[in-house]
Length: 488
Ligand SMILES: [Zn+2]
Image (cartoon, rainbow, N blue to C red; front, side):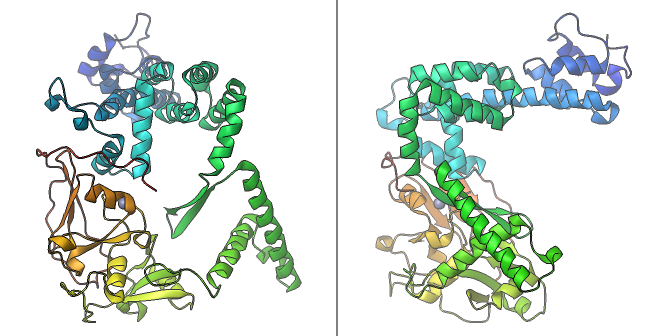
C-alpha cells in the first residue's frame, strides 16, 4: 500500500509507522502520502497517528500536503491535551499512596495544587490556576466540550474560552450555552467563538449577565507584561464602556499633541502616528502623577522607577546590560540614557563598595541599604516562576527570626504575599545555599530550585554552580489547607 501519488509513502514515513497507523485508518484511504495526511487531518488523535506524523519530513511534501500535516498535528495536540488534563484534574483527588479511605485533610486543596503545578511546569500562578480550572470543568459538566477536544475538533485554547465563559453559570445555563456554540466552534477563530459565547450567555441568562457585569467591574485591573526589544505591554481590564472612555481620552490628548507639534513647526512627516501619540499621551499622564509632591511611600521610598546600572557600563568601559526593575535586562545605551534622567533612581552595582550586608541579630527590619541591595539582586518573588516584582513583595527571613535567622543578604528574599502564606502555613519550606540557589520544597515532597539572579557580571561573583536535579521525590506530611481567597 501507499505506492501511488506524487511521492511514495515509504520515502516520507518510516515503514513501521506506516504499518502501525494503517491499522487505525478506515477503509478507503488512498495510497499516496497526500491522501494519508488529508485523512489524518480529519481523524481523532491516536498514538499511531502521532508516531506517523512525527516521522513525516515536511521537506518531501507539497505545500498542500504541508497544510494537511499542520492540520493533522493540530488534532494530535488537542488530543494530547485531552489526555493530560485528567491528570491535572486528578491533582485534587487523593493520591494512590493515600489508601482507599484517606483522611479529608490528605486531599489536595485547590490552592495547594496551584503552587505544585506552577512550580513543576514553571507556569505563572495564574496560568496554573487556569489549567486547573479547565481540567476541573472538562471533567465535570462540560462533557461535550471535553469530547470535542478529545476528537481534535476544538483546540485547548477554544475549550478554555468556552469553560471560562460559562464558569459562573448554572448547570442548565452552561449546558444551553455549550449546545449553542459547539456546532460552529470548530470552524471559528477564538475571537469569533468568544463573541458567539457572549451572545449565547446573555441569551441564556439575561438577568445574570447584568449582575455579573456589575460584579466584574469590581475586578478591574491593570497588568504589565514584558515584550522583546526593550518593550513592555500595559494591559487594562475594565468595563467595556469605560475602556471606550479611556480610548476617547487618549485620542483627544493625541490630537492635542499633534496640534502642538504642528504649531511648533514640526514637518508633518515627522509627527508620530496616532498609535504612538496615544502612548505619548499615556506617558505624559504617568510622569505627571509621579511628579506630585505628596505620594505614599513603600519600603520607605516614594514611588519611582529604578534602573540598576553596572558601574563599568556607566563609565563606558563595557556594554553589559542594565536591569530595569520590574522588567529585566535592557541594553547598555538605553540604560545609560535613562540613568542620566533625573526622574529615575539609579543603583550602581559595585563589588568593591563594601556596603554592609549582614546585620546579624542586631536588627529585625532590614536597614535601607540592605533592603535596596536585596530588591536589586532579586527583582521578583523567589517562588519558582512567580514574576511579582520585588517591590510589591515582603522581605522574608528564610530562616525565621524566631528560629535564629539573621538579617543578612544570605537570609533575606523577596516573597509575594501569596507565597509567603505558602511558606508560613501552606507546608512549603525554603532554603538558600551559599551560592544563592533557592530551593522550595512542596508539601507533596517535591523540590524546585531556582537560579540566583545575576544582574550583571559585576555583582559579587558566585562560583559556577553545577546543574542540579529540579525535582526530588520525597515523603513529606500533607499541609494544612490555605486560607480561602488570599488577598491577591
Ligand atoms: Zn510569588
